[in-house]
Image: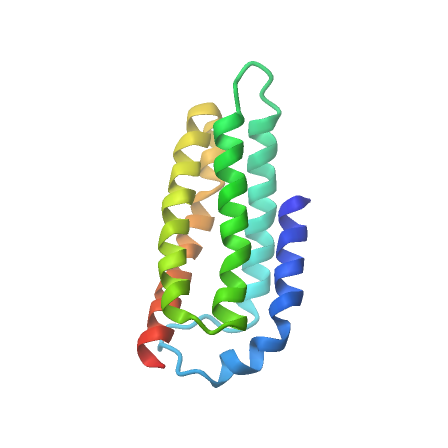
Length: 142
């Protein structure tokens, strides 16, 4: 639920910036606008399920994996204002590269505790690669 709340707040914060986004020069491979809320909702649900699988482990110290999860979620939340509100496209790309590293660390850390929890994060990592491509492309094209 926390993940979905983060997504909703981020969406509300950046909703006024969508006209600016549509006015940008976008790369040829840009998913349709409708894909973004659908994909992010699914990813936030997968994040929540994955986190639940980790925190429900009673015989394992989950401080490090939960800390990595929390940091990446905050980084995820901060990316939207950087890109959409402030229009800092290069910073947004650098930010997302750091986010890739955090999510990869999360996948590997989660996988050690519960393989399913780690694998549930793979779509998120793949989507971040697309988001990184879009961020870099927007920076270069604008």
